[in-house]
Length: 176
Length: 202
Image (cartoon, rainbow over all chains, first blue to last red; front, side, top):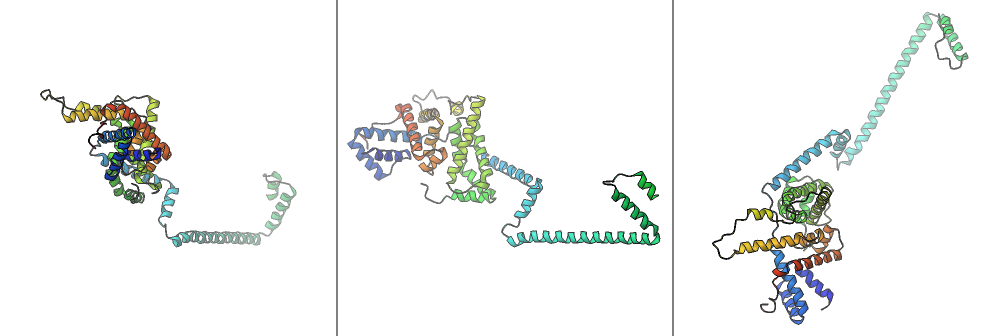
């Protein structure tokens, strides 16, 4: 018998008692070789001994209940954590439509339309504001024609001084 | 051995999808083997159950990433062993030696009734218990890896490949570890080994 075959038999013995046919073959092999007989017999004897070994530590009756209680606590904690951050909330909302690509595609479209509409409203508002200002200015020029020449003087004076943003006594006097 | 479809892996996939009841079934099925393994690795009865509960909790937390690539028992025992090794490392850092470390069945020993002096011979139970203690002690004296390998080898649902995965070793290294462990056990338990019977009875 070669080493490989012996190892195979040994590995079988480690996993428990051999079957009837294997047992017969083992006895036959053992009867031919004394050292092999001793080796196999020791393996069998050890297997028999270790099979008497119990689990060693019995679990308490409330083991499962304790584990499940901890599981529920973990679930509650994870849920709390998931709801606490806005990104997580958004992610949860997004996950509601898992497997519904049309609804998911509709979201960016709705956001784009809403954004465009908001921009349009803003532009309209700005245009209205500008029209009101023009109307007010033209009304003022019509009621006081000298205001136009004074405004022109101010504009020219400001243009002649580079970066003249500061209030100036000269300008104030002129305006008066 | 590992050929039939793994029903426990299916249960774990249900757990991954949020089925808590499926997890309860798994806990019920594996609580004793896991606690037994944990106890044999850390050799501390008082801590074994707590650690075993942690094993299940860890398994539950990892459910989201679970993939049925290996047998469920292989996956669970791997978690159990890793947690045990962490615990042993933590202990070695803190140097808190348990009094039970080399007397695994000391709790049972305290609870065992005193021997009946009226009975002339010790009962079979007492002999059995003594033998069991001797086996447990011999096992406890083995290096952790050999001890775990031998224990896992005794489980019918784990193949040598599964044991190798749990131990993080190659197949040949696993078999060699089991062999060395068993050789040491044979030496320690030599007086209890019933040999010499094949010549006569079989």
